[in-house]
Picture 1 (tube, rainbow, N blue to C red):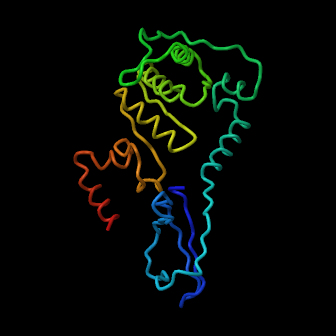
Picture 2 (cartoon, one colour):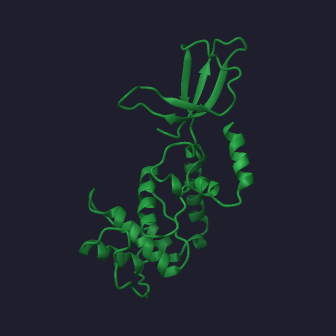
Picture 3 (cartoon, one colour):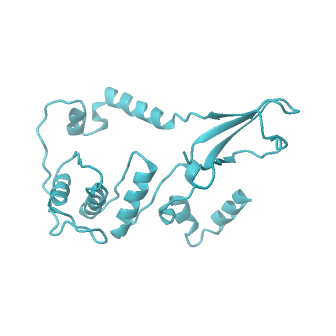
Length: 228
């Protein structure tokens, strides 16, 4: 997949084994079967005179799983790391539901997004009044639009920032684009390895927003040096 790290190796070089790690920047498509890899280090010793006897290995990146394990350890050691309601809900304990006393919006549909149907309105209304909610629905039922609408109302309701997460980069891009349509300021965070990859919402990415800042001349110089 785009952004994955691969290690290329070659045994038959003058200086012995050659090895280098790079990130996938191009994958096979309808036109060709090529895979493009951007290498991390300079290619001074790269065996460019041969096209055979290379081996390719997937580089395991445990960062996400390390964070999951750390969170689970913390949950097991410190009950106060999350609210008592969420703590007991996650562990399946019997606990009374909590209903927030909030002023619900007069109009639930968010600007820039399609009008919500009855079930979507009920979902938004429920989420805004509870600390933990689960919305289910088959593909095409408008879960992304509903989620973006919820984020819009949460931001207006609290006046603060809202952290939005999703299980894949595609899902995050789609959510970021929908939330941006509502007029909220959106910053799309991504892994360093994905900054050079094409994105449907490049204008929302943090590294691109930094480049566009006025008075960021020093940053522009550093970015140019990196490219060169």
